[in-house]
Each structure stands twice: as structure tokens, then as C-alpha cells.
Image 1 (spheres, rainbow, N blue to C red):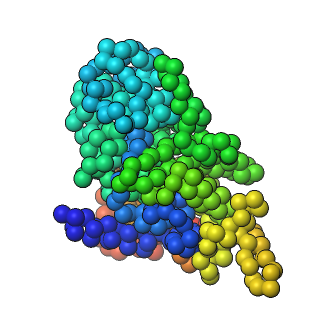
Image 2 (tube, rainbow, N blue to C red):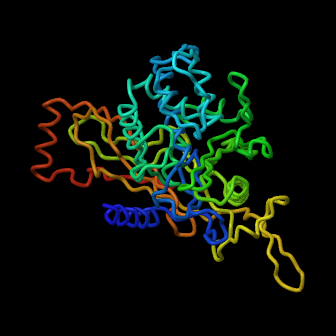
Image 3 (cartoon, rainbow, N blue to C red):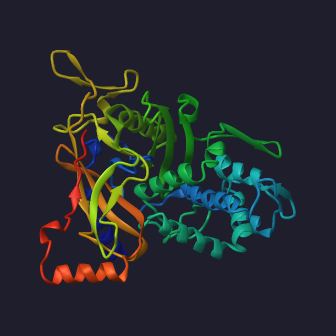
Length: 437
């Protein structure tokens, strides 16, 4: 089974590489972590990664999924932050050496306190209490966790417990955990209310948040730390920073580092990767709102052409680094936020971000024509975005197509003309509109 899993991981990695080019070419040996990923949450583009599909013990990063499920339950009205729960004997399953709030069976506690305990304290008794409340039992909740992971596209993840305890079939990857981080900030942003707290107290027990980036960078507001002997020191971090652009005034990145050697090192590596990505990539408008991409011929309808256009603006993440050489993370200066190279004789050269990016967009229509009647959601086109002739993002254009069929008489006339080849030159063809940048 492990050999099959390894083969699947390799093919997944190869497919990912073919599907989307890395925006930053970072030397893996210069990053002191076993696996890592940098993800732009607004475009969904992977900026850079290494061993990102290799399955590893996630440790307490598991609790991000517990919080995701709990906050979705709150959004659905099935749970309330103010709801008071009574701790059950399930809390006695938490061992003395595990992170916990030291809940006792019969003790009353609010869902709000449990969420803070889960995210800030990394409390295992908070995890099992929420799990039991939501699903009625731990096995049922773990099933829910795996269902949510599958829905998010976390294909190399499998959970066996809600706390993150090391078990043979409890694993995830930096790529999957970055997807989970993206889901937290986009779907249940209340998570950040808890993950940005620098401390939390419960029953006279004070706990200082272990995400050290919270104390050194005001733009960082999450996500979760984790540690076990099997996992090493893990960190999922996110920051939200102003861009100075009116099109996208703020930009949020998620960085996941797995298997670092210490709590200090995980913070240092994650922060460097994050700052490097903010400096040497940017978001640009790829598609405007209501931008006309193509027109498709319509058959058996009075409507002759159906307009394929965007339903919302779309951004693209582009590289501002020279891709001809690999970046050594040790050359990135945290003070100047620039790559600084020693070019010999004691001369240091600062590498500035590029001002212009070479991008082109190609519209690929999925249908040559539409035949009425139609009333369904259809994928009509894909916009492929290239930078320096490398594919960096694909955007699927979907629309609810509602086209009424023409009258029987009109269809008859159309049949007669087509039968005799009349007006052949008047048959419209697909029109694709170029996208200028």
C-alpha cells in the first residue's frame, strides 16, 4: 500500500509541475524544512514548493480541520459560539503529556472558549469535546474530517484523530495543508479572530501563542503550529498586506513549512519564504468584470450568438524575479526585503523586483456551437495564462446557459435552407476576442 501511495504522490507531483510552473525558483537545499508550500489565496496559484505532495505527520496542524468543521457548523446555524457545553468523559482520553485545557467531566464551557483553546492552546481536550458535540463520537467526526478534506481537494491527506496524534494512517502534505489554510481564510474567516490572539487564559491557566510570527510581524494573523517527534516542528502561517493597488488593495499568502528542527527555525523559514514571495511576486488583473471573451453560434434559436464573458474580475499572480537562476533563500535579506548577492571582491549586488511581466492569455472555447433549448450550467471556455511561455494559471469560464428554442416554423425554414445548402456563407462561426495586457 505504501508503494502505491508513493507512486501516486510522484505522479501527482509530476502532473502539478506540468500543469503550473513555479513562479519562484528557490533552491530546496537552502530552505531548512523537509517540505514547504507558498500559496496565493486570491488566485489559488502555488508560488513555490518542495516535497509538497509527500505525506508527513501534520501534528497539531490537524486542528485547523477541526476548527474548519466547527466554524462551518456555526455558519450553518447548527452550533453557536455562545452555546454552553458540558464536558463528557471523552476528555479523560487525553493523556497527561498532551496539550490541553485540563477539562474535567461535568465541567461547563462555551464553544467560543473551546475554539480559543483549540487554536491558541492547541488543546487536545478541546478537539475531542468539539468533535463529540458535532458528530456524536470521535469515529464519526474523523469521517467528517476526511469528507471535508476530499471536498477541498486534499488528495494526499487522511485523518485518524482530531488532535493530531501520530498514527500510521494519519498524514497530510504541505500542499494540502495550504489548501486548508486557504479554505479557512476564505470560507470561515472567523478562524483568524482566534489564530491572531497572542495568548489565552482558562481557569487561571495562561498560555502564550506558539506562533512566533505574531510577535514580530503585525500583518501575520494565523494559522497554526504543531510539533511531535515524528512530525518535527510544523507551521502554517498567513499574512494580509496592503498592495497599493486599487484593483486588489490587499493580498493574502499562506505558507506551510513541515519538519523543521526547532520552533525558532520554523518561524524563521516561514517568514523568509513569505517575505520573499511578497517582494518577488505580485497580483495583476487578468480578466475584467463582464469582459467579453468569445461568441458561440446558437442553433435552433432566434438568438444567433451567445456571449461568453466573465462574471467577476480575475487576478493572476506573476513573478517579479529573473527565472534564469535559482534563488538561495540565504541570500534574501530580511531587513531590506531584497535578494543580495556577493559578486566578488566584497561587492554586494541588490536584485530589485522586475517592473514589467511578460504575460499572454489564450482563450480556448469548449463548445463550437450551442443547440437550443438549453437551461444548464456549462463550462464554455478556459483562459490559460502564460508568463515567459510557461503556463502559470488556468481559469475555467462557466455560465448558466438559458436559450429558448425557436418556433417550429423557424426551425422548418432553417432545415430547408440547410437541406439545399442555401445561405451557407451566413452561418456564423465562433468568435474569440484577444485579451490585451
